[in-house]
Image (cartoon, rainbow, N blue to C red):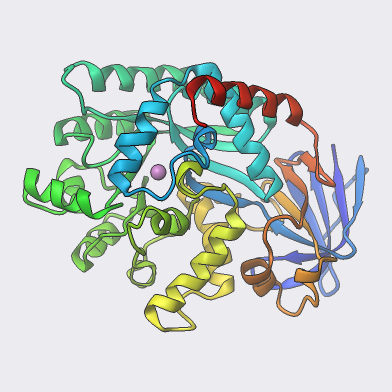
Length: 431
Ligand code: NI
């Protein structure tokens, strides 16, 4: 369906202007603004006309690191130290989950993500086949990856998980809005030999890698004891640092680690809320950006955040680095917005996402500016980073398809999802 969004304040790559945006065949076909008019597509007949008066149009936010099904574990394991949280509470609950649970949990996560303006997410979890089914039905955009580890007495453990991942990837190959990566979980759950094997498989299949790195202080000590190096050096030695590799967190990295990550063109995904809540610290994002690293933004899972709301994440990103560096320019509002959109697209290796420009894929979000926290609209980037809380999101379009219109979901039965999620939580015992 062709969509025309008329007279809308639009965040363009270099400016914010009132425009009319034409969407055709899933792409942004034309943008007309006051100054320079682009051609209206020939034979353009709008199937839907949206009046953008009093609204702000932004490229969809990209949640570049999350674990969608962990929404089931929201608010059930809080105020704990990282190791107590992960090994004591989260992993025992996760052992009870089935593929069907992950289908419903992914649906549940997408309700929250769409309603707060996220159009794409990069995920690492289990049962990615069931997750892909949910993403496919919903119409959201996702990069899925099955968490891999070799941390078991069973020598075939890592191999089995890798085969599971490859089987799901084969099933969903060529899907219009689902991509895949391989996801070795972390330096402390994967041995170097296994990491090298996964890296080879990724190279062979032209897949990116999605992993955690230097999240907490215990990891630094563990890796030093095991290999006498930093987690980043261990990853470099295992050959998994590449320009198609995504590393989440990097809170505990040294200056030398940052140089190594920059040298290999690795993408870092920063997760400020999760790092604060699990008391892991604050990643040196300013240093990463200065080193030329592509830094994108993620919420991490809802068990350590406890939302998947990218507006809270980008607001905090813009704030905490000012505080710790005592530098009001550390990360500006517009830089934080770029990190949450264009840099996420780079991490996805998608040059057609993350910006509103002609020819790009139409992943678009409309926000209501007629809210007390959004008035007056003096600087739209300040509105987005410092004032918005996500509740302003009204309409969400992914690949030219409307997934939420005036806060009404078009592709998800919300009540049914809440009902199923409640049953799962009761069964696995999250309360
Ligand atoms: Ni994570």
